[in-house]
Length: 146
Image 1 (cartoon, rainbow, N blue to C red):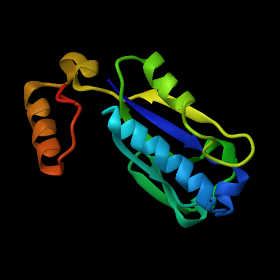
Image 2 (image 1 turned 180 degrees about the vertical axis):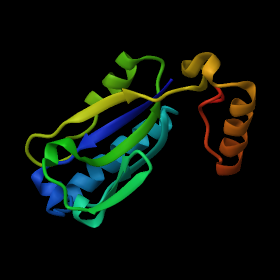
Image 3 (image 1 turned 45 degrees about the horizontal axis):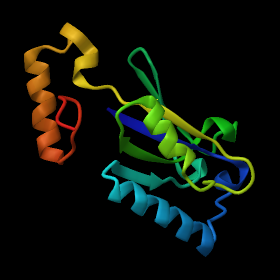
């Protein structure tokens, strides 16, 4: 199973406060541990929402809203995509992470949908399309290949 471990934003991350060398070293060591264990699939930090935008859908209408966005605790500052046997294992990996931001910080662990989760709605043709896209992008997962 794949899980997204989401680093919740804080006032510091939204203000663009960068980690110290020590914090980067601790995170690098954690990332190496994830990689050595074979669970790390991807991971990145995100710039503050002031450098981003949202696309809001309402029927056929699309509206672009430039950042920054309010409620920093609802925003994402980074993520890891990991492979784990269960939610409990993914949570255990998240608990081993050095504090991702100064002060109080939070990680949210969410399971990634796999093809099997969509049942019969994912027809063989749609599954084949998904497999082709994953092969083209070099990603894994949806069809149980991860």
